[in-house]
Image 1 (cartoon, rainbow, N blue to C red):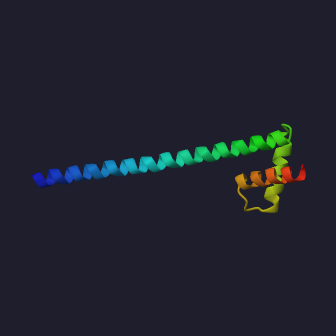
Image 2 (image 1 turned 90 degrees about the vertical axis):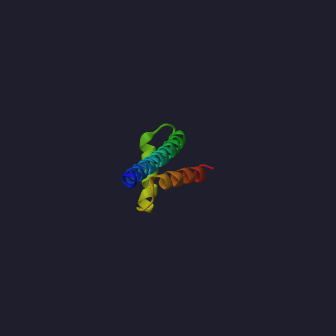
Image 3 (image 1 turned 180 degrees about the horizontal axis):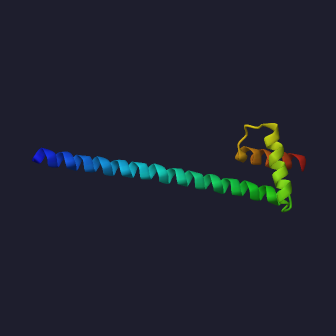
Length: 90
């Protein structure tokens, strides 16, 4: 009897630890995704300022960088577009 109760208690403890572990992983992923989204928004706003609010121009600048390297991430393309704009407009 005591052994079966102990087994149930240990199983419950293991289940709780597993649930918290999974929840923590999900929370950290959402937090990371949120930070990444904020970074992309920040980069796009930077490009919008440089392009005087012209969304079409911003998209063109990003697409130009992506055309040069089709494996580039959106974040890297935006950073490259900002660097290129700043270099070209010195």
